[in-house]
Image 1: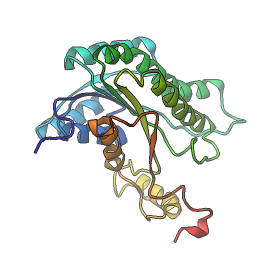
Image 2: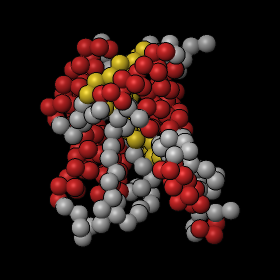
Image 3: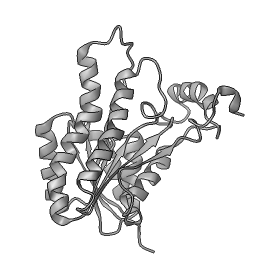
Length: 258
């Protein structure tokens, strides 16, 4: 049986670990040739080796998605390696915590540049290529934080992800007749730390009580939603988001979480 992305090519940003690595693995397992772009190239290379050992086709490159110059170079290099870019899964992002009263302007700029401006830069760089081919899938990792819920100390992060959702709606309209779709996945709390580690235990202790399904999500849970949006099955879906959060945003209060 063939994979859902057989014959397709994909560029995955932030693919060196966590959700991005899960997207890269699932896309490759479904038949896509994958280029992993990450700031720490050694992490991307490690994910590519795992994919290659299981019969997939993947390579890695170093990129800072907040840099217009590096984004242009990334798209050019991905096209050189892949021939054409069918899918961009833009997952790269940062989430430092900081109170507004203590936040430096540089901290705000770093988060907005990495999480939101990067989406503009990548979309602007890849759209001419996709429009010429009359085919393209752009899938973005957004978040429930910002568009649906919020936490103190993450105003910059929440603003960036709310901006992502607004951007994809407008961008999707601009290319709706060009064979290009632009969508996003909104993850809830996902276990991205090493299972059993102190960080993973802390994440579970603080976050699981708010999740009706009683467990953290895994990177693959997000990857499979991204897979649908990247596939031809979603050809008639654009400017939309899929929430994958174990029901976290559903309860009216904590008393509703059984």
